[in-house]
Length: 145
Image (cartoon, one colour):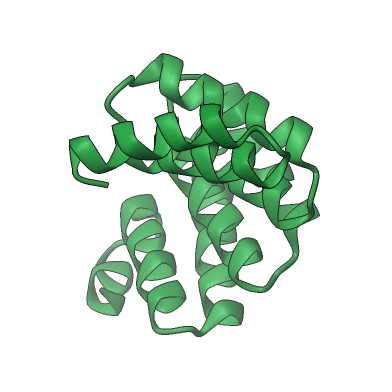
């Protein structure tokens, strides 16, 4: 991937892919730098903001993760992964009310989103809505989540 950047320093997709790679390799500083470069080259890249949100979530910086997921959603409101991960970040901060809102929104975007169904179910169980939560968990399992 660095070769692609060497050939074309304005290769925004290469920076995006490099950022994802570094994040998967748990090199979050390099991931952040690469994704920030992708955003510098294309400020309307919902994928770059989404993946930057993932970097911050992996660092347990959920406030910054949410900021980046929401920026991705300003650009592309149908990015169901960004919606779901916003919910995950709220849940990680034990802000279950907002988590539920985002999980429901992800399910509205894609009723077969097993991760969002499961996340909503677990969060509902955590908030004392066991029966409703178990229904969502069962739907997720039926889909394969």
